[in-house]
Length: 374
Image (cartoon, rainbow, N blue to C red; front, side):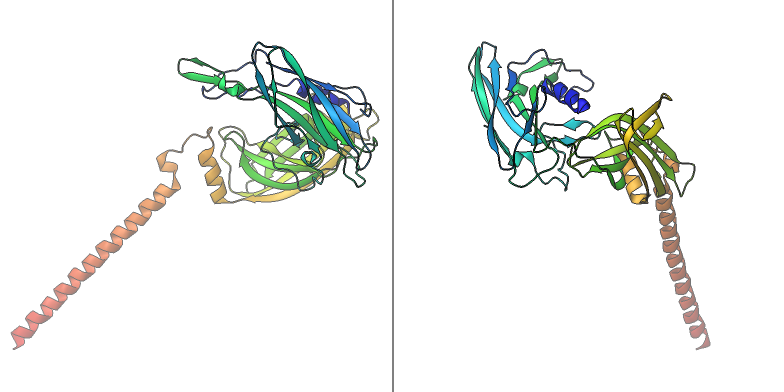
C-alpha cells in the first residue's frame, strides 16, 4: 500500500496538460483556478490525501470535498467519477480515459458513487461538494478502486498563440476513491491473455497483454520479457521494466519494442516472460535487476507463448511505422511481380497476334493453291 499511497498522493495534485497543435512544444501549467480538499470521514483507513473507506455491505454514506476559487472570476468545475485502470506504462489512472474495462471488473465504482456533474464557484469563495457512495449488498473481498476528477469547464479555451501555433491547457485534480469491506489484503494474480503485434506512437511493437483478475493491487512489478524468432532464429527482442503497478481487475498491453527503423518480419515467434511483484526483504523470489542488484519479491509468474505474424499484418504495420525508411523501388517485390505480369501479358498478346497472322497466312496460301489447281 505504500506505493499506492505515493501514487495517489501524486495524482491528488496531478495536472493534465494537453497540447493542441505545434509539434514538439512543451506546455506547462502555471496555476489552478481552484483547489480541492477532501474531508476524510471517520471510517477512513489510514492517513492519506485520498478516500480509503471501510464500509459494511449495503452501507451508504456521504463524502465531502471543499472546492475553493481564489480568483476574481467565476469558475465552473466539471466533476466525474471513474474506475481505476492501468495504462501501457504500467501506471494506474484514476481519471476518465479510453481504456476498456477488464471483463473481470464486477464492481465498477461508477455504479456505486454519484456526484453532481458540475459546480459553479463564485469569485473568492468556497463550496462543499457531496459524493454519495454505497457499498454493494453482498460480501465483497478486496478493493473497489476509482477516482474523482475535477476539471475547470472550458479551461481548454484559454490558449496562447504564437507564430500560428495554438497551445491549449487543461487542468484537473484527481482524488482517489477506494472502498473495501475488509482490510485483509487480497493477493494479486497475473494472466497472459494474448501476444499480438501492434504499434505505440506509430512504432512497431509486440504487445503482451497482462491481466490482474483479482481485486487486489499488484505493486512494484518487474517484467523481464524476450521475443525470439522461430522462423528466423536471428531475430530477438528483449525489454525489462520495473516499478510498474496494476489496479485491481484491470489489464494492459506490455509493449516489447523491436527497435526504431526495424521492420516486423512475418513468421513464427516465441515469447518468454517472467514477472515479479511486491518487493520484500523476506520475499521468496529473487532476481538481478538491470544494475545487477539482487531484488526480492513476494510474487512471481512465468509465461511462454508462441504466436505467428502474417505477411499481410507485417506489411500493414511496416507501412505505418514512421521510423522505417521506404524501400528502394528495386527492393519492392510488388513492383517486380507487376513487371513480370506485364511482360507475361505482353508476351501473351504478342503470341496471339503472331498466331493469328500465321493462321491468316496459311489460309491465304491454301486459297491460292486451290485456284491454281482449277
